[in-house]
Every structure is written in C-alpha cells, then in structure tokens.
Image 1 (cartoon, rainbow, N blue to C red):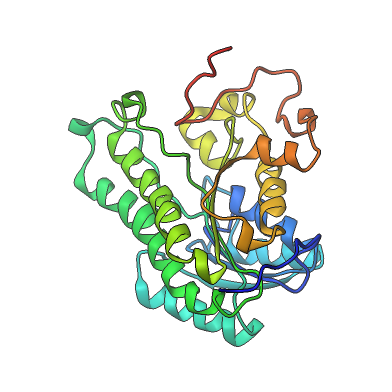
Image 2: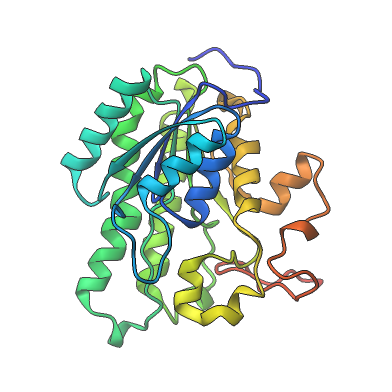
Length: 285
C-alpha cells in the first residue's frame, strides 16, 4: 500500500488531466489549479469557436498560462480510445506523469423515454459513463506512480428516488454511471493509495451550457463555476490515501475548509438559488 501522504496546500507542479476543460466547470477547475502553478492538460473537443458556447482548448490554454500555469491543449473526444490514449501519452511525455484525473466531460439530454433517440442515448452513455471509465483506466497506470494520486468525477451522489429517473431516465443512468465508477474504483484502488471521489453542486451552476437549455434568465438562479473550482481544489490538495469513495457536495467541502459565507459565489446576489438535480429536499426545507 502507498504510504499515506500529507495534505498539500498547493497544486504547484502537479499535472491534471481534465476532460471537457474548454469551458464551464472544467475551465474553472483548470484555472484554479493553474493559479498554483499546476500543469493542465486541457482534453476537449472544441478547437474552433462554437457559435453559442464560448471557449476553445486554445483560449483556455492561454488563460491558464496567464495565471501562472502550464498548459497542454489537446483535441480529445472521450468516446475514442485512441485519442484518449494519445493524449495521456502526450501528457506524460510533456510533464513527466499524471497526478490527477478530472472527469468533467458530459453530455445531457433531458428527455423522456419515448422522445429520446437511441443516438442521443448512446452519446450520453459513451461520453458520461464510458468516457469516464476509459479516461480513468488510461490515466491509472500513471496515477499509480504519483505520490498523491486523485480521480475526481463531476457526478452526483447515488440516489434511487424514482423522481430522478421518471422524466429523464437515460441522462440519470449516464450520470450515475460516472458515480458508479467512483464507488467501484475507490474500492478497487484503495490499497494502492488512489483517492477516487465525486463532486456535485448543491445548486445550479451558471454556465453557458445552462443558458442553452434555459436561457439567460435561468443563470440568475445559480452560482458561479468558481464554487466548484474551489471545492475541487480543496479535495485535490487532500492526502489521497485517506480521502476516497466520497460523494462530496461543494458547499460541504468548503465548510470543512472554513468557508461558510457563499454569497460571493452567487451569479446574481440576492436571488433564490435553484437546487441541482439528484438532490432530495432537506426534511427541514
């Protein structure tokens, strides 16, 4: 078993392999780590500007370098094993290894069973579940050589309340597949010192992808991606050997780090925040 490591206050010099890192939460996690001086592999599909969604792997790479990190932008579709393998190989060649794997890439379609095409079903499962499994699998040989290896999946706590299945079964199955990777890999690699955890937001996170589904008004009821970036940073600086198999919530992670005033994360101060998917109401609410 890997000897327990002490918590780190910084990710300086660590190498993070982040899927879907060209915008939103993935970009925010990348920039937070880069501010410490980390090496960031931006593994995403977007190489050319999207008409509706800002950000490319190259614009994020420039932003990473502007705040003091080192960037390696790579065009990666997590559905393609050869592309993921080539990206991992390039990361190791460039930075000497991989210390952290962040599975952020995700596809979403909130549609009932009769209205969902199998093409969309396959996309969500290939990106969310299979992409997470594949990326983790290919990073693990290198993570096992790190002195503080982490896998962090942006996926929800496993909740079998039928309410979360009845309206968008296929999406729920695909996201829970990512969470099952946490459950299984945490147990499988616990004795080898790999920390495998999930992180999920308490509230809606205001990203460009949310705007596409709900318009500009919906963004008013969420928090900035920075809350997820700060929570991820708090997890990834923990000693991996003693931190695994957890389904973390962003606000709880920050509270453990002594941050209880979250008002600064609100996209619009004073607005009532919308709870995220897969979280049942608290009995006291």
